[in-house]
Length: 150
Figure 1 (tube, rainbow, N blue to C red):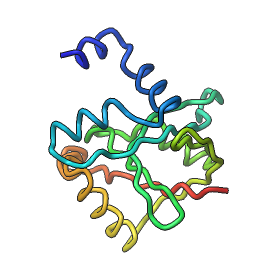
Figure 2 (cartoon, helix red, strand yellow):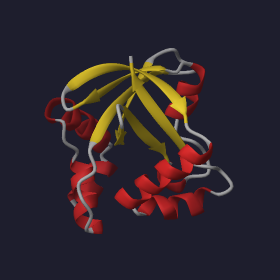
Figure 3 (cartoon, rainbow, N blue to C red):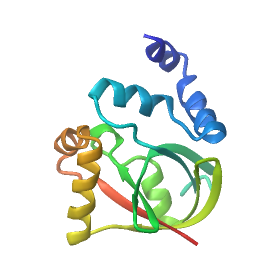
Figure 4 (cartoon, one colour):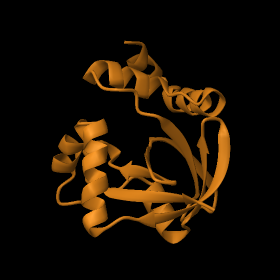
């Protein structure tokens, strides 16, 4: 109920960004993990440069670790279009990520082929709704982006 009220007031995205920035934890991830009975999925802040505006754009995203890189999923809840940060990274792949209250420079690479399949299975295992999102998004293929620290 509280989440719905905050969403209608358009306060939730700001609150979520502040929580992740200052505490390193996500209220939404915590609520979703309780709702789906899964482990808490850590959240990072991704800052890109807007493709059209040239302004900094920051979004909280679930992330997964793979060796020394972080990866994020461009699901947008199964919407037919990519989230806004995808075209931003395609035009300017340099970004900032904030993880555990520390900011890092990163370079984005879009994952394809066998590595995509392997990482997709890790993502779906950690957060099963991604499978439903992929079905809803069809024919759009949900992007997986590797964020390599620079």
